[in-house]
Image (cartoon, rainbow, N blue to C red; front, side, top):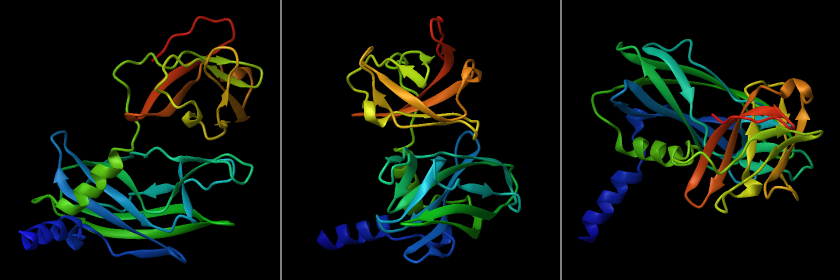
Length: 269
């Protein structure tokens, strides 16, 4: 019985080399590879990911890197059989240890990527540019080549990707915990109507890289938070839609709100 259990665990956690590229060194102590679930979902998508192995003292960055971080950029143009891709970003850590606000991943990290399959043989040729940082931050570039075979799912890589996907914020069933995003003189006012929302965990992000929001500060007025605008503030923010990610005891969630001027009656999306 013990032998059978040991064999099962070994099969579960051992890397399936056919569904992973070679490891590449990104920086001293940090390496990465491309992994694949080797399976087509019912909607025609294929799950792959960048697996990064680094110690806790090193970090890379979320889709919005923050004040000092380096954005992560993916290039799939040399791949075959890929019609499009979407990076599914796990919820990051809000890092203010340097006096700046950055959104980071530390230690072992998997960035899941959902590919749209064209129906042709899928051969991935991916270039990634990202920041790897400790006391200083440097951009690194790596190229990963991986033929994806979709005739049999890879158990080990599927498990790694599912674990990472569990940390990706999803829309809540009831979208009422976070109120309207109201523009103030220094940022956004967000009332919170749920004790399950971790106020310190709120991350407000825009699709516009010229706009950057800071870490939340507890509001004395509405039981919620004030989120400062660090870059790109002003009346022009009104009418724009922001993404708000946050943590709860059930995991990470995300909602979208249109920014409205003070005194307006907003809607939610």
